[in-house]
View: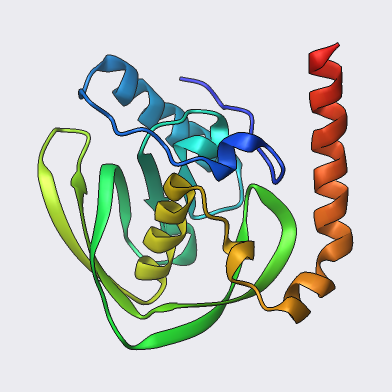
Length: 177
């Protein structure tokens, strides 16, 4: 078990589609435990493997901090239904610290995926649960919540986004030396 280092905006792994998990094995189960451990140290409700440098299609959503009794780890998830009813709500992201903005998403979805015990499930979700599942799924596709922000919202957060990018640029420069 380990608390893993967060990848932040500007890190190339966040913009790549994560790889399918081809086999449920001890490594995958360890990744899930590490995701749980890392999320418990953060102030968030979800975490995808790419956010901690693991390019696999795995994520965890834990709404218990928001008073909803829902927690799930999914492997190779796919959205199989999106409602036409949409809702706008403010979102943030552990990989884009301190940045917030309004994102429009379907109110309800159905998602299919594998649980850590190997069972395939289909989940019907609405409200915050649907939003969190979609947000984490986007991470597996290389999409960040800021991609949905309006020009005005992006302008409002430009300074913070530029600061995060600059920190990553300096970190990458040090690694290449």
